[in-house]
Length: 276
Ligand SMILES: Nc1ncnc2c1ncn2[C@@H]1O[C@H](COP(=O)(O)OP(=O)(O)O)[C@@H](O)[C@H]1O
Ligand SMILES: [Mg+2]
Image 1: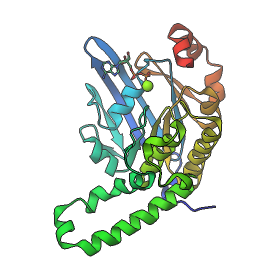
Image 2: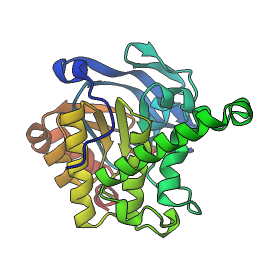
Image 3: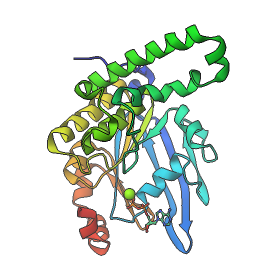
């Protein structure tokens, strides 16, 4: 098996009860619509925490607030004890909090390998000073990125498509590529927005086992939005249920499955839409 390039974080593995992310009283309105309504929850280090709820419950908006894409109207977000509520997405990213989008955002006209190498290059290679005066350093670093990118691709079983244009990948492969782009950044917390949507069964297994390995062997924490209940119930613990912009309940998968309030939220909401 190919070893993952991220360094193991021993403190993450030995202190599973520590809170890594705290969402405190977040609200967000769009015009008259309150998409998120005083929502609070926390994510413990080393967990694969599920975030579920009917369509329109506000899950993606919460992700957007956590990652700096949409500033919340109220409340604050604490990541590793730091208030990140007013930081830009790139500042949050470099602190080790990464996310994927419901619709993958690959660079279609670049190869898969180039897509990965692009991630950390922004930190050294793009600076004019370095390009002009430190060519050697940039070239060395580029080689390192290449090695790391190849390692990430092998890890995700994407080596066979490394020279393909990203645009030519299947939906599931694009999701894996997005995960790969995050791994290049050595994240501590990964937010996944519907990783199973539009993914075939083989790739779904690949994605699921990657999440498990990264969580259990590398101590990376996951928060994932997913409509595929089989995936949520087998992968996530705890599961947080959102309804109408706030947290409804949180519990172990078995508790959530038999919870009456959860059932009613889905039935009362757009159950059919949520099942899509
Ligand atoms: N940028 C936006 N502008 C206007 N309304 C939005 C925007 N983003 C989300 N909404 C609305 O906010 C509500 C919550 O959306 P969302 O967070 O995407 O829910 P979920 O991901 O749980 O399905 C929905 O009613 C949605 O239409
Ligand atoms: Mg959504």
